Length: 333
Image (cartoon, rainbow, N blue to C red; front, side, top):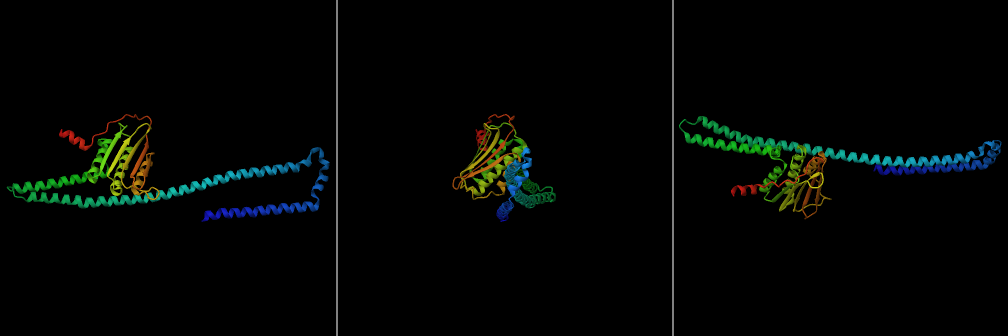
Protein backbone atom coordinates (compact mmCIF):
# COMPACT_ATOMS: atom_id res chain seq x y z
CA UNK A 1 0.00 0.00 0.00
CA UNK A 2 2.87 2.38 0.79
CA UNK A 3 4.39 1.69 -2.64
CA UNK A 4 1.08 2.65 -4.29
CA UNK A 5 0.82 5.93 -2.36
CA UNK A 6 4.39 6.99 -3.16
CA UNK A 7 3.90 7.52 -6.97
CA UNK A 8 0.69 9.47 -6.31
CA UNK A 9 2.44 11.77 -3.82
CA UNK A 10 5.30 12.28 -6.28
CA UNK A 11 2.87 13.24 -9.08
CA UNK A 12 1.12 15.68 -6.74
CA UNK A 13 4.44 17.37 -5.91
CA UNK A 14 5.25 17.65 -9.59
CA UNK A 15 1.92 19.36 -10.30
CA UNK A 16 2.54 21.86 -7.48
CA UNK A 17 6.05 22.63 -8.78
CA UNK A 18 4.78 23.15 -12.32
CA UNK A 19 2.13 25.55 -11.03
CA UNK A 20 4.81 27.57 -9.25
CA UNK A 21 6.94 27.69 -12.41
CA UNK A 22 3.96 28.84 -14.48
CA UNK A 23 3.03 31.49 -11.89
CA UNK A 24 6.59 32.86 -11.65
CA UNK A 25 6.93 32.97 -15.45
CA UNK A 26 3.64 34.83 -15.84
CA UNK A 27 4.61 37.25 -13.05
CA UNK A 28 7.94 38.00 -14.75
CA UNK A 29 6.11 38.63 -18.00
CA UNK A 30 3.77 41.14 -16.32
CA UNK A 31 6.65 42.93 -14.56
CA UNK A 32 8.74 43.10 -17.74
CA UNK A 33 5.76 44.51 -19.69
CA UNK A 34 5.03 47.13 -17.05
CA UNK A 35 8.67 48.32 -16.84
CA UNK A 36 9.46 48.02 -20.57
CA UNK A 37 12.39 45.85 -19.54
CA UNK A 38 13.40 44.80 -23.06
CA UNK A 39 13.59 48.40 -24.35
CA UNK A 40 15.52 49.49 -21.27
CA UNK A 41 18.04 46.67 -21.66
CA UNK A 42 18.45 47.40 -25.36
CA UNK A 43 19.20 51.07 -24.65
CA UNK A 44 21.67 50.30 -21.87
CA UNK A 45 23.51 47.60 -23.83
CA UNK A 46 23.83 49.68 -27.00
CA UNK A 47 27.19 51.07 -25.82
CA UNK A 48 28.57 47.48 -25.72
CA UNK A 49 27.56 46.67 -29.28
CA UNK A 50 31.17 45.99 -30.27
CA UNK A 51 31.30 43.13 -27.75
CA UNK A 52 27.96 41.65 -28.94
CA UNK A 53 26.66 41.71 -25.39
CA UNK A 54 23.10 42.04 -26.63
CA UNK A 55 23.33 38.43 -27.88
CA UNK A 56 23.91 37.11 -24.37
CA UNK A 57 20.20 36.73 -23.39
CA UNK A 58 19.54 34.37 -26.30
CA UNK A 59 22.72 32.41 -25.60
CA UNK A 60 21.87 32.17 -21.91
CA UNK A 61 18.36 31.00 -22.84
CA UNK A 62 19.83 28.26 -25.02
CA UNK A 63 22.21 27.33 -22.18
CA UNK A 64 19.30 27.16 -19.74
CA UNK A 65 17.31 24.95 -22.10
CA UNK A 66 20.35 22.72 -22.56
CA UNK A 67 20.81 22.39 -18.80
CA UNK A 68 17.14 21.54 -18.41
CA UNK A 69 17.46 18.85 -21.10
CA UNK A 70 20.62 17.50 -19.43
CA UNK A 71 18.89 17.41 -16.04
CA UNK A 72 15.88 15.58 -17.52
CA UNK A 73 18.16 13.00 -19.14
CA UNK A 74 20.06 12.40 -15.91
CA UNK A 75 16.81 12.25 -13.98
CA UNK A 76 15.47 9.50 -16.26
CA UNK A 77 18.65 7.47 -15.86
CA UNK A 78 18.58 7.96 -12.10
CA UNK A 79 14.94 6.88 -11.95
CA UNK A 80 15.77 3.74 -13.93
CA UNK A 81 18.61 2.94 -11.52
CA UNK A 82 16.33 3.50 -8.55
CA UNK A 83 13.73 1.16 -10.05
CA UNK A 84 16.40 -1.51 -10.54
CA UNK A 85 17.56 -1.05 -6.95
CA UNK A 86 14.00 -1.41 -5.67
CA UNK A 87 13.50 -4.57 -7.71
CA UNK A 88 16.81 -5.98 -6.44
CA UNK A 89 15.89 -5.17 -2.84
CA UNK A 90 12.50 -6.85 -3.27
CA UNK A 91 14.18 -9.90 -4.80
CA UNK A 92 16.70 -10.07 -1.97
CA UNK A 93 13.91 -9.78 0.59
CA UNK A 94 12.02 -12.64 -1.10
CA UNK A 95 15.16 -14.79 -1.16
CA UNK A 96 15.89 -14.08 2.48
CA UNK A 97 12.33 -15.00 3.42
CA UNK A 98 12.63 -18.19 1.37
CA UNK A 99 15.96 -19.04 3.03
CA UNK A 100 14.53 -18.47 6.49
CA UNK A 101 11.54 -20.67 5.72
CA UNK A 102 13.77 -23.38 4.29
CA UNK A 103 16.15 -23.19 7.25
CA UNK A 104 13.24 -23.57 9.67
CA UNK A 105 11.91 -26.54 7.73
CA UNK A 106 15.33 -28.17 7.59
CA UNK A 107 15.80 -27.69 11.32
CA UNK A 108 12.37 -29.24 11.91
CA UNK A 109 13.26 -32.16 9.64
CA UNK A 110 16.58 -32.63 11.42
CA UNK A 111 14.88 -32.73 14.79
CA UNK A 112 12.23 -35.17 13.57
CA UNK A 113 14.97 -37.40 12.14
CA UNK A 114 16.79 -37.31 15.44
CA UNK A 115 13.61 -38.21 17.28
CA UNK A 116 13.02 -41.11 14.90
CA UNK A 117 16.58 -42.38 15.37
CA UNK A 118 16.33 -42.00 19.13
CA UNK A 119 13.04 -43.91 19.14
CA UNK A 120 14.50 -46.71 17.03
CA UNK A 121 17.63 -46.86 19.16
CA UNK A 122 15.50 -47.07 22.31
CA UNK A 123 12.89 -49.49 21.02
CA UNK A 124 14.68 -51.72 18.53
CA UNK A 125 18.29 -51.66 19.69
CA UNK A 126 17.28 -51.62 23.33
CA UNK A 127 15.05 -54.68 22.93
CA UNK A 128 17.68 -56.59 20.98
CA UNK A 129 20.37 -55.80 23.53
CA UNK A 130 18.05 -56.82 26.37
CA UNK A 131 17.23 -60.09 24.62
CA UNK A 132 20.93 -60.87 24.17
CA UNK A 133 21.62 -60.08 27.81
CA UNK A 134 18.76 -62.34 28.91
CA UNK A 135 20.07 -65.22 26.84
CA UNK A 136 23.65 -64.76 28.02
CA UNK A 137 22.42 -64.66 31.62
CA UNK A 138 20.55 -67.90 30.96
CA UNK A 139 23.75 -69.41 29.56
CA UNK A 140 25.62 -68.47 32.71
CA UNK A 141 23.02 -70.14 34.91
CA UNK A 142 22.56 -73.27 32.83
CA UNK A 143 23.80 -76.47 34.34
CA UNK A 144 27.01 -77.83 32.93
CA UNK A 145 25.31 -80.91 31.51
CA UNK A 146 22.21 -79.15 30.11
CA UNK A 147 23.53 -78.90 26.56
CA UNK A 148 20.09 -78.53 24.94
CA UNK A 149 19.20 -75.45 26.98
CA UNK A 150 22.58 -73.92 26.29
CA UNK A 151 22.25 -74.47 22.53
CA UNK A 152 18.71 -73.04 22.50
CA UNK A 153 19.81 -69.93 24.42
CA UNK A 154 22.82 -69.51 22.15
CA UNK A 155 20.56 -69.79 19.10
CA UNK A 156 18.16 -67.17 20.40
CA UNK A 157 21.07 -64.86 21.24
CA UNK A 158 22.48 -65.36 17.73
CA UNK A 159 19.10 -64.52 16.16
CA UNK A 160 18.81 -61.38 18.31
CA UNK A 161 22.36 -60.39 17.31
CA UNK A 162 21.50 -60.83 13.62
CA UNK A 163 18.39 -58.66 13.98
CA UNK A 164 20.50 -56.09 15.75
CA UNK A 165 23.05 -56.14 12.94
CA UNK A 166 20.36 -55.70 10.28
CA UNK A 167 18.87 -52.79 12.19
CA UNK A 168 22.26 -51.11 12.46
CA UNK A 169 22.81 -51.58 8.72
CA UNK A 170 19.45 -49.98 7.97
CA UNK A 171 20.26 -47.00 10.17
CA UNK A 172 23.68 -46.60 8.60
CA UNK A 173 22.12 -46.78 5.14
CA UNK A 174 19.76 -43.97 6.09
CA UNK A 175 22.67 -41.86 7.29
CA UNK A 176 25.07 -42.72 4.45
CA UNK A 177 24.57 -45.23 1.60
CA UNK A 178 27.44 -47.72 1.92
CA UNK A 179 27.18 -48.83 -1.73
CA UNK A 180 27.96 -45.29 -2.82
CA UNK A 181 31.42 -45.55 -1.28
CA UNK A 182 32.17 -49.17 -2.11
CA UNK A 183 30.53 -49.80 -5.51
CA UNK A 184 30.05 -46.34 -7.01
CA UNK A 185 27.11 -44.19 -8.03
CA UNK A 186 25.68 -46.48 -10.73
CA UNK A 187 25.58 -49.58 -8.57
CA UNK A 188 24.23 -47.60 -5.61
CA UNK A 189 21.34 -46.25 -7.70
CA UNK A 190 20.67 -49.73 -9.10
CA UNK A 191 20.50 -51.13 -5.57
CA UNK A 192 18.24 -48.23 -4.54
CA UNK A 193 15.81 -48.95 -7.39
CA UNK A 194 15.82 -52.70 -6.69
CA UNK A 195 15.14 -52.29 -2.98
CA UNK A 196 12.48 -49.65 -3.66
CA UNK A 197 10.74 -51.99 -6.12
CA UNK A 198 10.69 -54.77 -3.53
CA UNK A 199 9.21 -52.49 -0.85
CA UNK A 200 6.64 -50.71 -3.01
CA UNK A 201 5.65 -53.43 -5.46
CA UNK A 202 5.91 -50.87 -8.30
CA UNK A 203 8.01 -51.66 -11.34
CA UNK A 204 11.19 -49.53 -11.33
CA UNK A 205 13.87 -49.67 -14.03
CA UNK A 206 17.26 -47.97 -14.04
CA UNK A 207 19.37 -46.90 -16.99
CA UNK A 208 22.94 -45.68 -16.63
CA UNK A 209 25.21 -44.50 -19.41
CA UNK A 210 27.92 -42.05 -20.34
CA UNK A 211 29.87 -42.00 -17.04
CA UNK A 212 32.73 -44.34 -16.09
CA UNK A 213 34.28 -42.62 -13.09
CA UNK A 214 33.25 -40.90 -9.89
CA UNK A 215 31.84 -37.42 -10.31
CA UNK A 216 33.01 -36.25 -6.90
CA UNK A 217 31.55 -36.96 -3.49
CA UNK A 218 29.32 -33.86 -3.48
CA UNK A 219 27.81 -34.62 -6.90
CA UNK A 220 27.42 -38.34 -6.16
CA UNK A 221 25.58 -37.82 -2.88
CA UNK A 222 23.42 -35.08 -4.44
CA UNK A 223 22.30 -37.35 -7.29
CA UNK A 224 21.67 -40.24 -4.90
CA UNK A 225 19.65 -38.20 -2.42
CA UNK A 226 17.58 -36.54 -5.16
CA UNK A 227 16.76 -39.95 -6.66
CA UNK A 228 15.91 -41.25 -3.19
CA UNK A 229 13.59 -38.31 -2.53
CA UNK A 230 11.93 -38.68 -5.94
CA UNK A 231 11.19 -42.38 -5.35
CA UNK A 232 9.88 -41.60 -1.86
CA UNK A 233 7.45 -39.05 -3.33
CA UNK A 234 6.33 -41.56 -5.97
CA UNK A 235 5.54 -44.10 -3.23
CA UNK A 236 3.65 -41.54 -1.14
CA UNK A 237 1.71 -39.52 -3.69
CA UNK A 238 1.94 -40.73 -7.30
CA UNK A 239 -0.10 -43.99 -7.32
CA UNK A 240 2.09 -45.03 -10.22
CA UNK A 241 2.37 -48.40 -11.94
CA UNK A 242 5.94 -47.93 -13.16
CA UNK A 243 8.92 -45.63 -12.65
CA UNK A 244 11.87 -45.00 -14.95
CA UNK A 245 15.16 -43.73 -13.50
CA UNK A 246 17.94 -42.68 -15.88
CA UNK A 247 21.37 -41.22 -15.22
CA UNK A 248 23.26 -40.10 -18.30
CA UNK A 249 25.83 -37.81 -19.76
CA UNK A 250 25.40 -37.39 -23.48
CA UNK A 251 26.59 -34.56 -25.73
CA UNK A 252 26.73 -31.72 -23.24
CA UNK A 253 29.14 -31.28 -20.36
CA UNK A 254 26.53 -32.07 -17.73
CA UNK A 255 25.12 -35.10 -15.98
CA UNK A 256 21.36 -35.57 -16.02
CA UNK A 257 19.19 -37.56 -13.63
CA UNK A 258 15.64 -38.18 -14.83
CA UNK A 259 12.95 -39.84 -12.69
CA UNK A 260 9.68 -40.35 -14.56
CA UNK A 261 6.50 -42.02 -13.33
CA UNK A 262 3.08 -42.69 -14.86
CA UNK A 263 1.11 -41.67 -11.78
CA UNK A 264 -1.66 -39.17 -11.21
CA UNK A 265 0.61 -36.13 -11.64
CA UNK A 266 -0.18 -32.66 -10.41
CA UNK A 267 -0.73 -29.08 -11.54
CA UNK A 268 2.62 -27.22 -11.11
CA UNK A 269 0.80 -23.87 -11.04
CA UNK A 270 -1.24 -24.87 -7.99
CA UNK A 271 0.80 -27.46 -6.13
CA UNK A 272 3.56 -26.31 -3.83
CA UNK A 273 6.83 -28.10 -3.33
CA UNK A 274 7.17 -29.98 -0.10
CA UNK A 275 10.17 -29.97 2.16
CA UNK A 276 11.74 -32.90 0.35
CA UNK A 277 11.73 -31.20 -3.05
CA UNK A 278 12.86 -27.92 -1.50
CA UNK A 279 15.80 -29.73 0.06
CA UNK A 280 16.54 -31.45 -3.25
CA UNK A 281 16.53 -28.09 -5.02
CA UNK A 282 18.95 -26.68 -2.44
CA UNK A 283 21.22 -29.70 -2.89
CA UNK A 284 21.21 -29.14 -6.65
CA UNK A 285 21.97 -25.43 -6.27
CA UNK A 286 24.84 -26.19 -3.87
CA UNK A 287 26.71 -28.06 -6.66
CA UNK A 288 25.75 -25.57 -9.36
CA UNK A 289 22.89 -27.68 -10.71
CA UNK A 290 19.22 -27.16 -11.44
CA UNK A 291 16.16 -29.17 -10.46
CA UNK A 292 13.06 -29.08 -12.66
CA UNK A 293 9.66 -30.70 -12.18
CA UNK A 294 7.38 -31.29 -15.18
CA UNK A 295 3.89 -32.61 -14.57
CA UNK A 296 0.24 -32.37 -15.48
CA UNK A 297 -2.87 -33.87 -13.83
CA UNK A 298 -3.27 -37.49 -14.94
CA UNK A 299 -0.02 -37.50 -16.95
CA UNK A 300 2.55 -38.46 -14.35
CA UNK A 301 5.51 -36.48 -13.17
CA UNK A 302 9.05 -36.09 -14.45
CA UNK A 303 11.84 -34.81 -12.22
CA UNK A 304 14.99 -33.67 -14.01
CA UNK A 305 18.26 -32.86 -12.25
CA UNK A 306 21.03 -31.27 -14.32
CA UNK A 307 24.53 -30.72 -12.90
CA UNK A 308 27.33 -29.17 -14.99
CA UNK A 309 30.60 -31.09 -15.08
CA UNK A 310 34.19 -30.07 -15.81
CA UNK A 311 34.83 -30.26 -19.53
CA UNK A 312 38.08 -32.14 -18.90
CA UNK A 313 36.21 -35.18 -17.55
CA UNK A 314 36.16 -37.92 -20.19
CA UNK A 315 32.85 -39.13 -21.55
CA UNK A 316 32.71 -42.84 -22.28
CA UNK A 317 29.55 -44.89 -22.56
CA UNK A 318 29.44 -47.33 -19.69
CA UNK A 319 27.48 -50.58 -19.69
CA UNK A 320 24.32 -50.71 -17.65
CA UNK A 321 24.95 -52.60 -14.41
CA UNK A 322 22.80 -55.74 -14.09
CA UNK A 323 19.88 -55.74 -11.73
CA UNK A 324 19.61 -58.08 -8.78
CA UNK A 325 17.12 -60.27 -10.71
CA UNK A 326 19.56 -60.67 -13.60
CA UNK A 327 22.36 -61.56 -11.20
CA UNK A 328 20.19 -64.22 -9.55
CA UNK A 329 19.27 -65.74 -12.93
CA UNK A 330 22.94 -65.86 -13.98
CA UNK A 331 23.95 -67.55 -10.72
CA UNK A 332 21.13 -70.07 -11.08
CA UNK A 333 22.25 -70.86 -14.65
